[in-house]
Image (cartoon, rainbow, N blue to C red; front, top):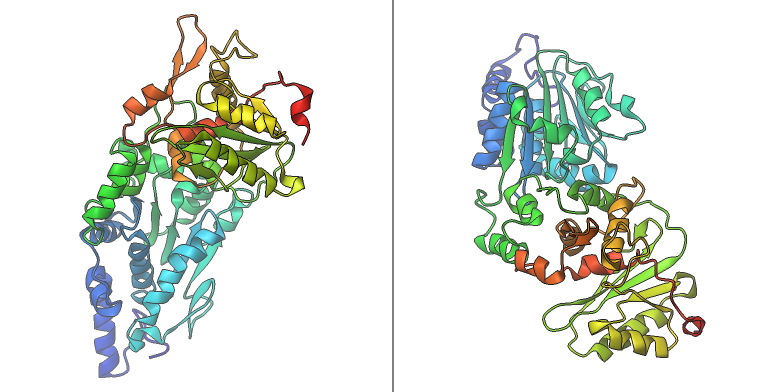
Length: 466
């Protein structure tokens, strides 16, 4: 029924329109009934709580675990807002266009596909817009990308019926939120923020503080409380990372990570680095090889300037010469322009054999002696402490990029620093880390990454011959 009289001020012209408008008024008061009858979606109890709170408080912030249905919750709210009001305007935004096109927008399209034609036929769903067929310029939902350099793009929207949906809100800059909040000037203006809780700073994080409960309806969507997430899935995450890990807190519990004061790399800085996809790598290429034995993994990580590349190699070899063969193969298969200037390998303990053999094969190996004397020995207790110190400082640059690898991210942000009795900076030993994190094992990914910050120069010229 194109051009329906959805809550308009016009007089109904026949019995059908009278009934239709009465139904819209019912749906306006009961979005759960709307979801069941119009969208054929029965919201979960967690989703229901978010929806009802948005009606009550008009501003809601919801942090969510993985796969608990926050996107469907947002889609229910968007369609309910569009269908039960007269000439509403909805703006859907996220930190990047990819987060919209790969997240909430396909869900809006899917729910439209299964909608009853009486409602569906009123709208056109396009790549970045939903438009009412009769009032396309005043009755719509559209996407807007929240960019730091262009916050004014989020400002200036004013309407009697206005809804902002900010998906992946944890990654959106504070000045964007200020522009959005500045647009919410009328009684029927609403704000919905949803995100996995990955950052311990910013507007979204602040919106969940207890002091802001009077302003925002605050919700946590946990995988444990979600009926359609299996116990096996939750148990996998628990065994893989441990209940006290940041990964488990975020992905399962829907809780913010813990930043312990003695952790060297802050979680929010490391996570921010995983979301950068356009940093241009420049300068020399370094490889770090962390050699392991037993049940641990040997890991190879590559870094060029401010970028750690995503082709991380992890091998579980008991024979160190098998590890040597895999490193050699990786080196030989690397194009000349991408070959490393230096491959750092710990030249004592487990790494001595691989280091000596790689040197014999004329690869550009350099000794990275974790227990060796640091160049800045006044501040750092040993070389390993120096690598970690350099890496921790590196993450404070806004132009660094690392792969979104859960092992790397978890380990980098959970290795702790200590202060030696001499007052120098010290990093906990691997066995100390493994004792604290029995499910995580050795921090082999993190150690391979920080090894690329080694400053070793004590190398004979002949090992540079290839």
